[in-house]
Image (cartoon, rainbow, N blue to C red; front, top):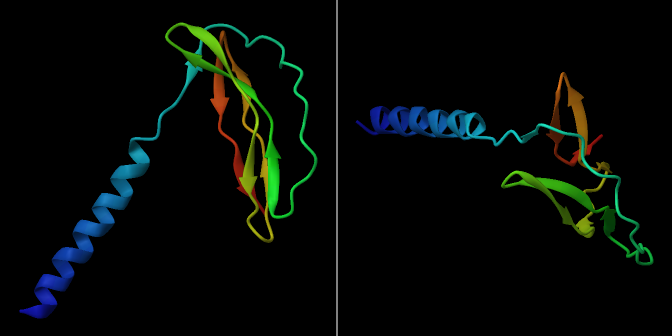
Length: 99
């Protein structure tokens, strides 16, 4: 009986984790973002990486999101988010940690 419960819980967990990736939000804008704003980058902080500000598409217009510090993941480097042209539209590629 315990094995059957374990297998059911395992199957439910796998299903829940795979479903969460399906709900990832894709942001597409019909026009290019404005040029990035000039930001004063604070002095380096030990254990943190600077994530520069960016234009976010919301409610039919671009809104500036200021830069912020990201806690460093040892062995990784921070790749800032950026807009990518896709045909007539622009698609947001979120920032992420890369090896």
